Every structure is written in C-alpha cells, then in structure tokens.
Image (cartoon, rainbow, N blue to C red; front, side, top):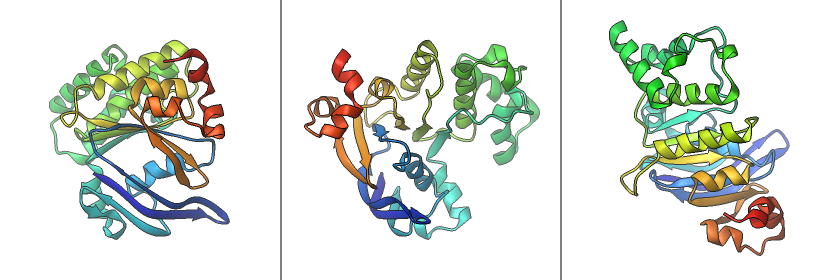
Length: 249
C-alpha cells in the first residue's frame, strides 16, 4: 500500500504539491495525468524517497519513508522498478552492460549467472537480438524496451513506475510499449504486479490504466475509473481528455 498524507513540496517559490493525499494498492494500474509542471514525476520520486516532502507523510508498505535512513530506503525501494523518461540508458555501455549494471551493483553473481539473467530479461521484452548493440543504434521504442528490462534486473517489483514511457515515440512504437506494459502487469488483482504511469498522452493512458488521477494546482482534482473520467463535468479535464471523447475507447 502507498499512502500520501497531506504531502506538500515546493521548489523555491514554486509550490508543486500542496496537501496532496491519496492511497494506492500495489496491484492497481494507475495513470497520473496533468499538464507540464504539475508535479507528476515528482510523485514518482517521492514514492522512491529520491525527494523528501516539506510536510506530510508518505507511507509505503506500512513504513513512513520520510523518517527512514538511506539504507532503510533501499529496502523499501525494492518494492518498485522505475522506467525513466527517454529510457536513460548509459550511452557508453552496450545493451548487455546496461541491463547487467544493477545485477553487478546489487548482487554477488558469477558472470555466467549475469549473462543468463540478462538474456532472460531481454528475451522477456523482445530485445535479446540487440544484446551487443549500443543505445545510439536503437530506435526510441527499442531503447524503452531495454530500459524496462534494466528496471527489472535489480528485483521482481510489486509495482513498476513509468515516467512518460511513450513520449517521442511514433504511434506504432508507442502502442508496442503499451502492450509490453500490460504484459508485465497482466492477471487479476490482487495477484498481479501493479503500475503507476505518469503521462500527458491520454490515449496511451487508457490502454494501460484502470484508475485515473488528474493533478492540478498541487492536488488531485479527479480520481476515478475510465467511465467516470469520460463523464466528468470538469471543463478543464474534459479539454485534457478531448482526444478520447472524440474517438471513444
């Protein structure tokens, strides 16, 4: 369970979050929507303890992470994997080395074991054939697939966090990434891995999420399912989701 209780955070004079509160179970499939600068990615960083709030509490699996040491935070972070915007692969490393990085960092494994695990993860995302390629040789969609494999290397998370996973991709590549996201969170609750996806692309959000939050002025102004989202009478939110209102889902 993830619990945000009255969380506020400002960067200088810019109030990003202002008394934000919500609860989420690890098996949920959630999309956090909102305009640029509304704090969507900030929420992911707070969940991981990469940022600390100015006030309020963040409780992960029963622990208030705002009071944990860096060593204790590492244990809590094992509940999650994160896929950063643009993939964030190491440019100077091959695909193999990128995926192996966390395995070498966190585990005492023989090289044969690392190679086996790397190939298994790349096979899972359909990228084993690119094991010796450099990031610059990969398309945007291929880079996201490798980034997802790398995010799974450190652990088998309860929930995967995605920061704008389809930004900059062509429609076919974006659709393929959405398919992979769904594959990694398949099954029925509570026996499945959940996800939180931060995005401004509403058409992709509806392909992967079942619960939708809309962030505005530091608070969640909407929290509901797809039918509630499409039937909202909030004028600003209706403009934001206009694409799915026009074409249907």
